[in-house]
Image (tube, rainbow, N blue to C red; front, side, top):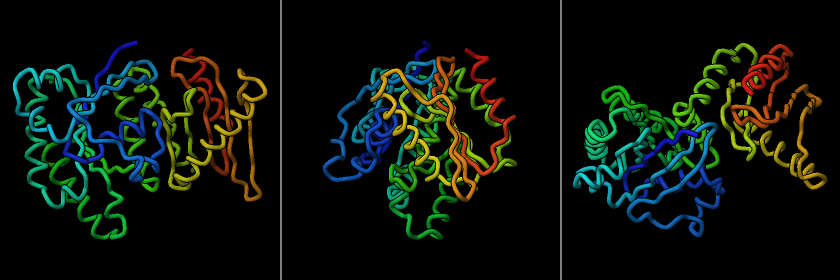
Length: 304
């Protein structure tokens, strides 16, 4: 497998470690949000390892208290943190932006400068995190989002996403991480391109692809299918397969279709070994065309 380096940098308490633990280690976001489950502040740089389709990922989670050292310190500090990075995620929380907007922008500009010197081919992403903190005031939130987009995405050319590990918003975080990792992976990139060309908007359905650990590798969803429907369907697949494994550890769903009284349909297709590491595909909608199912199956199995 190819190796890739993902470097997380940002302000103290911005949520970098919670992002890492929720996405890469599968820790319960609700637990991380609680006082007892919140991780201790990172000291220096914490190293994590993960895999994604066809790549091994080294994740560096840096201490917010030492952010300026990584950016303005000596060459060794910069090389150890930024050097060899394939993707850099700059994390700041929404309340910090409101209080210290200019400082956030200045530090991001310095991150860009160091990146250009020590890892010129890396892509920078900005996560405006903890958006749940201003979730109640929707009108004010929209104004803040517009301001962040203007300053970071339009003026600096850095892709900005708005994230949280709060269950109401965690889908944005997970989907953003999927896209970033699929950009680093040749097969993941191919998978994203395939899903885009399906043009699901006309079909009013969702398509979710899971690996052996029931982790979502990629997905496409129209507004007619809620985020809750996606997560509940994934939980259903987990529960049914675990029930099968109590009977036979090697057993899993290969083909299952469930239709409700109101004609809502959940179709589950199970796959063996393939180049994308896709174990299950879930289709959700009121009318799931057979030609779509066949096209997805052909794409997955022809790559094996």
